[in-house]
Each structure stands twice: as structure tokens, then as C-alpha cells.
Image 1: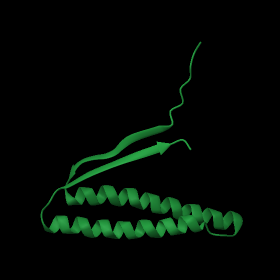
Image 2: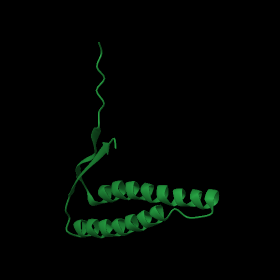
Image 3: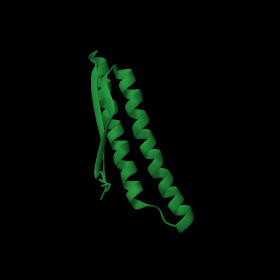
Image 4: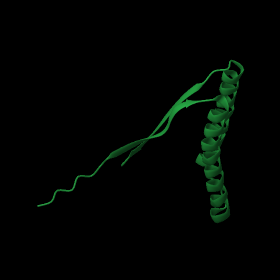
Length: 96
């Protein structure tokens, strides 16, 4: 008899390390920009297919743009102070 166990949660380390401000900015900008693009395309697709924007995606895109500006400011301060940045980012995926 074989028993199947369903994994309900998975985690992975996406980013882990110490980075120069320039490298940190490149990594974080790339990730946030990809998510912004994802939400903008999702809303555009909804508008084309159904005649209405995806408000959740519009709102999330705005939040991400604000986060991006805040992170850029923080990294610029680190650069001005000649500091290194430690970045840790985990992704948690759950079956719901």
C-alpha cells in the first residue's frame, strides 16, 4: 500500500547575499519591474477581453511603484555612505 502525502507549503530562497548598491538596485529593480509589468499586462488583457480594467492589478501596480521608489531612495543612501546591502528574500507558496 502506497501512501501519498500532499505538500501544503513550499518555500525557497530567491535572494540571499551581500551586494553593492549598484548590484542591489539592479536585482531589486528587475524583480519589481517584472511584477509591475505583469499587473499592467493583466489589466490591459482584462480591458481588451472584457472592456474593464483589473482594479486589483492597477492597485497592486501602484503599490509596487511606490515600493520601488522607496527602495531606490534607500539604496541611494547606502551608495552615498559607501555601504554594502544584505538582501534576503524568500518565497512562500501554500495550497489553499
